[in-house]
Structures are given as C-alpha cells and as structure tokens.
Length: 428
Image (cartoon, rainbow, N blue to C red):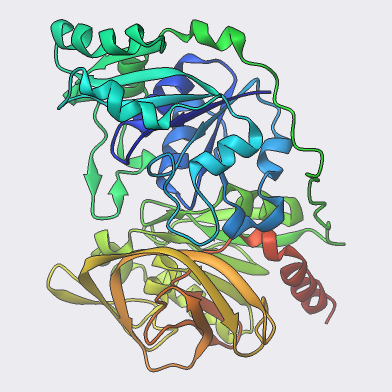
C-alpha cells in the first residue's frame, strides 16, 4: 500500500474536502483519520465505498497502526487532525508526529481566500522533507490563482491543484461539526466537483509503505461460541470507531437496530449504543417505546449494555431539547440539558470499582465531545484524571451491567476483558 497524507496550517482549510476528492478519484483508496473523529471517517467511507479508520495512539494504545497493517488497499489517504503541529496534549498527538514517524508523503492544503503572495510565507513553516506539494484552496479567480501560485513556483514548491471556491461543494456544519454522511445524498457529487481540479499524476512517485520494524499487529482472541451483538445505528447514533465494530464482528454476529425506527434486536449477549445526535431527534426517541422497553428488560435480566455520550443521553430519564423535556429510556435517573459551550478533548480515567469491562484501579483512555450537561445523582464509576466527565470530574454511570459514560472508547483496546466477561456469562 502507498500512503498519502493531507494536512493544513490550521483547521477549516479544506482538508476533508480534498481528502474526499482524492478518494473519489483514486481507485482502491482507503481512508484513515488521525485523532478522535467519527464524522470525517463516515464521510470518507461513503465516498470510497470502503470502511474508514482512525489512527490515534492515545485511544487505541500501542496497536494504533493495526488498521494500516491489515489494509489491502492500493492507497491509504491519511487525513490529519487540526493544524499540522497541533496536539493539545502532553503526549505528541499531532499530524506532524504521525507523518514523521511513518514517513508519510503529504499534501499541504492552504486556504488562500484572503491572501495572495503571502500564502507562500504562511505555508513555508509547514513544509517538510516528505511534502509533495501544496493545494491552494478557495481561489477567487484565475488572476488570483496566478498571484498565489507564482510565489510557490518561484521557490520551487510544486502546486498540485488550485481549487476555486465552490459553494455547492461545501459540506454544511452544525454544533458538533460537519453534517454526517447519511444526511448528504449529494456527497459523491460534491467530491467529484472538487476532484476535477486535482491532477493526481504526483502519485507515481510515491513508494510503498514500510511499517516500523517494532510494530506488531494485535491478535484478537476468538471466543468459543459466536456471540450475539446488537449495535444501535441510525442518524441519532452513528459515532463508532470502525476498529470497535471490526472487533465486535470478529467475535460474533452483529445486528444493527435503529432506535429512531423503534426497532428491537432479536437477541443480544451485548448491546452497544454509541454517540451521535439524539438531541436532534427527541420526539422520535420519546416515541420509541419498544426500543426503550427492550433496553430496560435487557438490563433487568442482567444483560450487558454499553453506551457512550449520545447513547448515555438516551439511557437517562429526560432529555431537554427545543424548549421541552422528553422522556428517554430511564435506565439512569438523570436529565440531559443543552449548553452553549463545547466539551472536547481527550480523557484519562481511573476506575473506582469493578464493572463488566473494567476493574478497580484500571486506567482508561478515551475522549469526550458534546454540547450537553447531565444532572444525575447516581454514583459514578470513573474519576477523570484528564477531562470533565459528567460532573465534578466524575464519569461513568453503572447499573447492574449497564455502563454509560460521556467518554468514548475503542473497544478493541479492552477486548480481552470484554471477551472474558461474555464467555464466563455464556457458560453460566
């Protein structure tokens, strides 16, 4: 496989649009997103027709390169996170770190909408040994393009593409970022319109990726019996790491069900409700009585259930949205309220007592991403070393064998504990 990186001096430059354009133009390309992002991989999967993966050594641990090692794609397009050097953490989690470690040749996307010759001087701080060239995004006219391009060419920097501002190709945004793939029927057309401005002849000089010699792929234990796994998936719940879903598919039969459609899985050893946008669909979720009853019965019969962020919000008693209070599943006793500020960042938690997935004293790595708060009197399972959690730097509600948290996790990292729990329960 050949790797190609896409980065930018700052967020909002057009990395995602260029990545999607490349995926639409390069046959057999697979997408990888650096950092804890669910929306961009969903968009990439829609355009490429292949599953898209995250690369994140904070959340995934030392096996963060497993998706790359397992890929059979001809090309891997790696989209960076934020600006090239941005990390926001004591551990270096920047795009620059990953690209340097893996020797990834990369394109630098520069939004030149408010610059001309100055774009070169902004961009040159981000030039590196493995940079192939620059993509000049949001060009206003041919005259503008020539003004911007001239300074790069004078200094010997290859201009891969000049992309005009195309309003019809823009991806709309909301309070948690870009719209999701399921909400845009014209996503492929948007990507093709941008791709028309990119000459991919630069790909000919890219060499095959050689993983660092110290990297070894994690071997996943296969259980003695095929497990039944139910995953909530629709427009309200679709924030999942592909590596988590791959892990669940490797250990059992995964059945997807939609709370928005009031669906109920046939049977489940383990139920998983990820994050998403439940606050956008409070009326539909309030009416989903069959789904909510199934979840309550599953937990009351000692079934395993895990819910992250949006999933946790659905398990609470009330969700306030659009000026009204809506009844949710009621497994937990709290109320979810909208807030104006965004809670975003990596989390590091310590388990205060045992649960089906963690043991007292375990240190757990995740991230949080929401614009809500939860008022819930229940005892919390985790103390946040890093991150805000539900309240008072505490996260994780636990009832019987239902675990809900604001933090998102990569299930593959904690696979052995989850498998052991399910296997023991299956023999009892």
